[in-house]
Amino acid sequence: MRLTIIILSLVMLEYVFPQVDKYVTARNNMVKIQITDRGITNVETIKAMRKVPRHLFIPKEYENDAYGDYPVPIGYGQTISQPYIVAYMTEIVRPTEKKKALEIGTGSGYQAAVLAEIVDTVYTIEIIPELASESASRFKKLGYKNIIGKSGDGYNGWPEHAPFDIIIVTAAANEIPKPLIDQLAENGRLVIPVGEPGTVQELMLLVKKNGKIEKSRLTFVRFVPFRRSKNERN
Ligand code: SAH
View 1 (cartoon, rainbow, N blue to C red):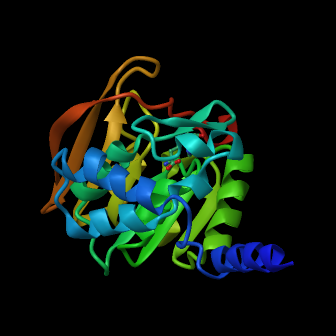
View 2 (cartoon, protein in one colour):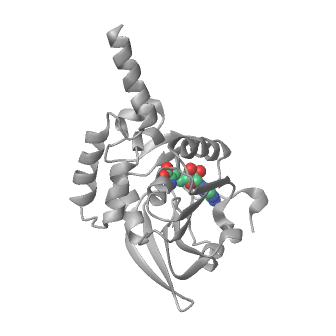
View 3 (spheres, protein in one colour):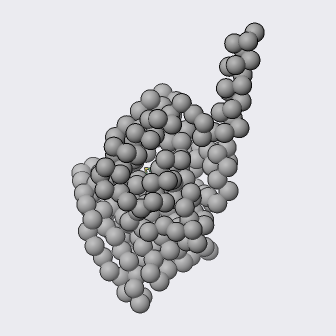
């Protein structure tokens, strides 16, 4: 009886405070070993990575791998990025509380959640409808009211909400979609893996200054392919 009450209270505690979870230590270790020891210094990024319950963005069967130093399958042939890459991409776009962000490739929703801890609003687009709806229920359950998602081909961005201070593309494209460059605000920062899918790609940073784009190459990465939907192709 007493045991039942204890178990019930623990379950309720986890429901009321989703952050009170058995992975707190794993998450703090992840942040120390994979994030700060490797040179990530942006305080807001570090705080967000400590807070977001990554294991709740991963299918139950892989839950134990949630804080590992590698990408994890999320179904439909897609993956959630390695924690370091999420932190790196978050830091490089210089998130602050008043900024508006667009993410292409919602996937599990983890990168969107990390950004949403810092910025004002995150718009996110996912081409696989099942992943779009799974991430939408996650955002709802975890209380992320500042993430607005939709299902579709992100190639054309989200003109109704443009311009964006931050654009993060989490799928590898051969070319940088022009509509995304157009939807970047002045001083806006866009990060995208560019190159052939299936091999390594180059992570590129684009910054808009006085209407002109400054491009720089950051590092090598490996992302799932950027896909196009037939009816939205142009
Ligand atoms: N940011 C994700 C990573 C998901 S992997 C996370 O934190 O979990 C990249 C995702 O991009 C996949 O879910 C894939 O379906 C999606 N994707 C690929 N091409 C796309 C496109 N043209 N528009 C929107 N999403 C796309």
